[in-house]
Image 1 (spheres, rainbow, N blue to C red):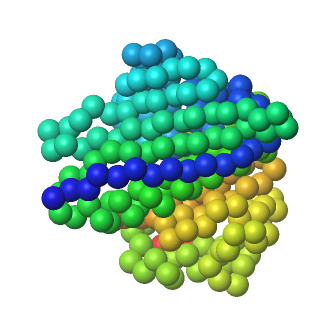
Image 2 (cartoon, rainbow, N blue to C red):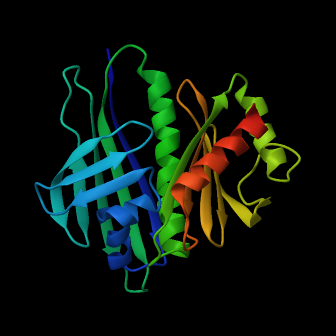
Length: 242
């Protein structure tokens, strides 16, 4: 049967429209809050390309109006599958900026509910990470790091294991202080994800779709080597969830 959807996220941030535009419309900017590696060929008719865990999506740019509006989306698949993103960026007289992101598309099949749940929770985390990025790291760029842990059978137990690994008594809650190399704060929590911000990183733990716990981090420290970090985080996930 499939499902047509439209999701909207809005936030006011203490960054300029130009800083927000750099975050959403350049490869290094997107690398610093979304997932995997990204490239942008700017302009209407251009392309946004990503690479994450063997998945390499490509989106055509439909609207390019810096710094106020950016829209891009996938081509419609044979089964009707499609997804599109629209960012609206509005500067305020107070010096703040309002970001509005609309995600829309179509999920095919009779089993769309699980995918929609994961996509909704993941999208909320990505948008919240964008807000954290332009609020705390504007002008800096991160090295994206992705690692996959062992398969998880009991997710309630897995989230508790994560909390213990972060120095907590149980599952992390938003606003809690944790230790992950350095002291940090839990900035986002939902059924599918946990996000932690430290002075030089944003660490994210995601419930892999029908699979493992995934580490999808953004590391701002100079000289970060993604190969070394991905190996280390893979070993960390094996220790905590193996």
